[in-house]
Structure formats: C-alpha cells, structure tokens
Amino acid sequence: MKKYVCNVCGWIYDPAVGIPEDGIAPGTAFEDLPDDWVCPQCFVGKDEFSPLED
Image 1 (cartoon, rainbow, N blue to C red):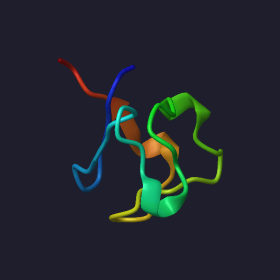
Image 2: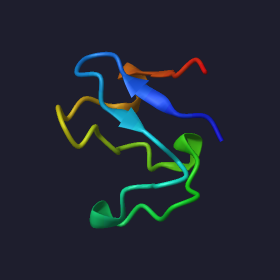
Image 3: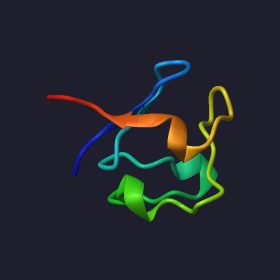
Image 4: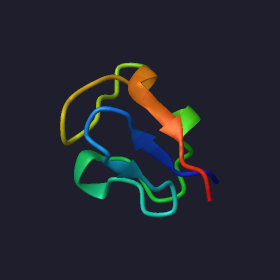
C-alpha cells in the first residue's frame, strides 16, 4: 500500500501503521479513509494529499 503526504504540512500517512489513536487500524488504505477524514496535524482534507514517491 502506498504512503500519502500532506501537501500543506508534510505529514505522512502510512497505511501499514494506520492512526490507532484516531481509530484508523493498521492496514487501512488511504483510499479507505472516511471522506470527511482530515490530516491529524493541520486538519486539511484528503484532497490535499499526494501519493508519496518511493
């Protein structure tokens, strides 16, 4: 699964880790995050994220 980076603050969503403190289980793909999910660091929406190039 691909990692995604916030275009605003640089925070990286790693699907292998998820965000357990926010109820997002490890193994949750970025595409499977709720539509109203926001960056836990700067609170922008999913549309402000880009796939992280390896």
